[in-house]
Amino acid sequence: MESKINRIIDRLWKDDGISGAMQYTEQISWILFLKFLNDLEETKNDDAELDGKTYTYILDEPFRWNTWACPKTKEKKLDVINAKSGGDLLDFVNKELFPYLKSFKSITENPKSVKYKIGAIFEYLENRIANGHTLREVLDIIDEMNFQTHTDTFEMSLIYEKLLKDMGGSGTSGEFYTPRALIKTIVDVVNPQIGEKVYDPAVGSCGFLIEAYNHIRYEDVEQNKQKTLSVTQLEFLNEETFYGNEKTPLAYIMGVMNMILHGIESPNIAKSNTLTKDIRNIEEKDRYECILANPPFGGKENEQIQLNFPVKTNATELLFLQHMMKSLKLGGRCGVVIPEGVLFQTNNAFQSVKKELLERFNVHTILSLPSGVFLPYSGVKTNVLFFDRKGSTSDIFYYEINPPYKLTKNKPIAYEHFQEFLESWQERKITENSWVVNVTDIKDFDISAKNPNKAEAIEHKSPIELVENIKVNNQEINDLMDEIEVILIGKDING
Image 1 (tube, one colour):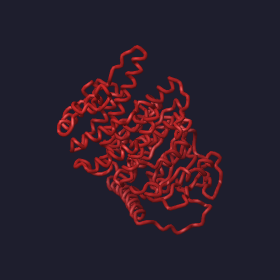
Image 2: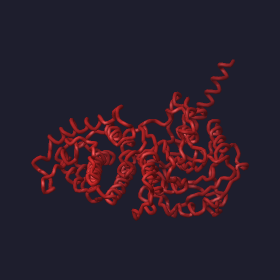
Image 3: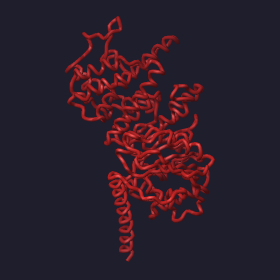
Image 4: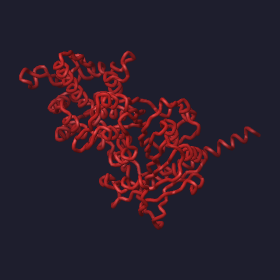
């Protein structure tokens, strides 16, 4: 299956309508999705016939894969006479197929239905393949794939993850990919269980939600060994477990497709900007047991968005943190990636948010990540903040990840680098990489990770890290100047 994907990529690279990894991944995605949907519907139709029932197809017959993409002869071979190609194929796809699929996002449809999700996906998609003969070749290759068994679907989901990783590694689309080793580590600590609702306020390609699904569904995901779950549990897992928002169209498309290709037919993913929600209106019934996220940081939000938060700031990382704190159910757990500045900054906004975090939540663990985890698209130093809504903070367990080599694009962080952390965090085992700080020893709400077990060393940063640090420092200076300006204006108004 992977060799087939590589053949498709080779053909798309030569097409005049495709430019870069993002676009060929997008185009492979919609075609794969329609083949997957066809095989899913055929399987459901076969099951219905065995039960003496009639299955109602989602797609009308002219728009089913076996009609327009790869019609078959009685011998189950490609019907070359009726299979469209060239300009005829492009005309059908652009003028008939896509408008038909876009129409599925209708107010008359149940937003949880697969039909509505299809419409939501294709609302933001267009066919970019310019050569109809190239499209014909791609359709023929994908038609050779079979998604009618769980093993085939599982294999496809792994290959799709690799496509998203390659797209994220292109350096232009960091929102699509958080390193799998880091996601798995965060999910291991938060430990979502069947019956709990899992939420990511900035889902990207849904890596956190899919890892949470694997954590709940499998005894051993590498061996494709599933846990035994009841029909009711499986229904809850598929329809009521996973929630998220994503504001950028392409990331939203990739995320929903990724969920469905992993077997989650009804993900509750909305295309919306999480920060437009006034967190004062979030009630207990709207909250989640588990929150997993790597939200965007370093950006700015306008004053209208800031009005949705008790602590006003234009720093997106602080707005997302407030949103997640408010969205966590009583007894719930959260694991979130944050830039290091959130830990050490002590201006008014950061102090206010961290005061509430320490006093109303239990910040039990802070995982310090090495520089380079998010290369090539970000060199900012980051941490993972783990907290739960089970009382206030007393002691914080810190752990500093120190890989045996300098992280680069071609030498990324690996799951084994987190093993000692995963073995020690619950017992708060003290090692040369870990330590515990009592909340009474924290001054001015500076909770940054300073390892007391190591002598201060001179850190030689790469040029890209220096540039990123300068950007962060400039952002902090701008934030401080904004606050000073507000204070001075206030004094002028008050005389």
